[in-house]
Picture 1 (cartoon, helix red, strand yellow):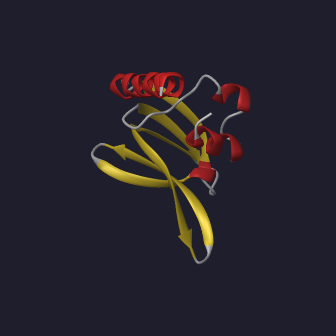
Picture 2 (cartoon, helix red, strand yellow):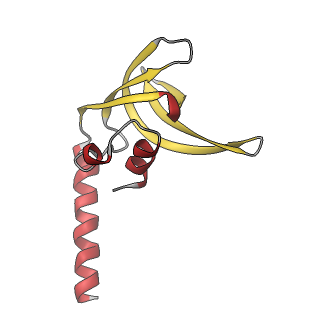
Length: 110
């Protein structure tokens, strides 16, 4: 499981068994649902960029970074309640598969 998915499992957005089949890549077009502190549900469709960790006043906060209609948005990971991949970034998936094959080859034929 990737670090990105592990973070989603840790904050309760995904169950571990769901994360096994889900991998979110930079550039995936996603629908994100956030439960805001005021009780509202915010739904964003945009390009997934990453999850980043920032330290504020000694406390680490995890942020989801997504591009929506050309604007870069940072949302607290703890508010994220659902991730749906609407259109996968196939180029990123091919690159990951190629990198994995190369690493596997190097491991055995090093």
